Image (cartoon, rainbow, N blue to C red; front, side, top):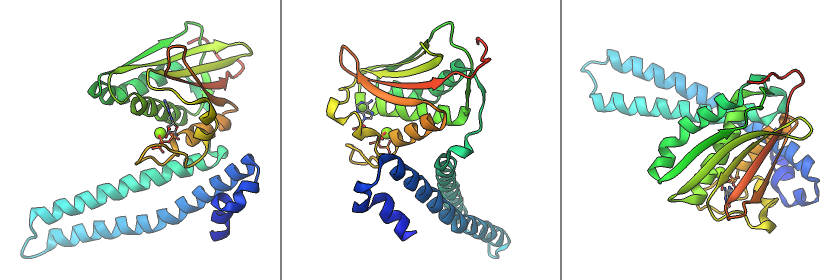
Length: 249
Ligand SMILES: Nc1ncnc2c1ncn2[C@@H]1O[C@H](COP(=O)(O)OP(=O)(O)OP(=O)(O)O)[C@@H](O)[C@H]1O
Ligand SMILES: [Mg+2]
């Protein structure tokens, strides 16, 4: 584990090709996720047993204690979910492909994040070209990629602005899903760095959101890139190949 970590993140990594570094990091995340999940599972079982003991306790325990245990269990589940997500993302082999209507995914993402956007007076709109066919993709991972992009857009705007989610078909049978915002945009010299794992400019950021988007794009045979819109603001373009035989949705 230690040497894996050193290879993936240590100064030796500067000599490694970017692809090799990503492969190592994927392995590291997957290994870390596995090792964290075991004690998490054991903690969950013990909290459950403790809850059962307390139900039978005499004199009865105060509701405050039961409620604290409930919080501990909910937090354990949240941690387990995060770790599971990393496991899903750690290897392209875990992509579970099925026909996906882009309209449904965009609508889902919009529904999920519209409250956050509205709270900051940000308008979130969706436009889909009429000829966009179904994609052959992992619906959960596609949604995750778009959620990461929209969350970044909300954070970039901070307050008052517009985010547009759009989908169209580009030349060569490629579906292009874009997330455009009215934030400050991405400086040209940072266009590559922002996709590197752990690159962040936010005080509480992990710098993993865009790296995960890139992992998902690559696992689907696609790409992710960024440009600035003419009027300022970033435009992230997720390009995914359309499966042969994809039908018009
Ligand atoms: N829409 C955007 N407009 C301007 N800059 C952006 C935008 N999206 C991302 N960035 C820049 O790219 C960096 C990396 O983004 P990424 O999503 O990988 O990490 P993060 O948002 O900082 O942390 P997290 O792991 O919580 O997502 C951000 O810190 C920010 O500087
Ligand atoms: Mg982010």
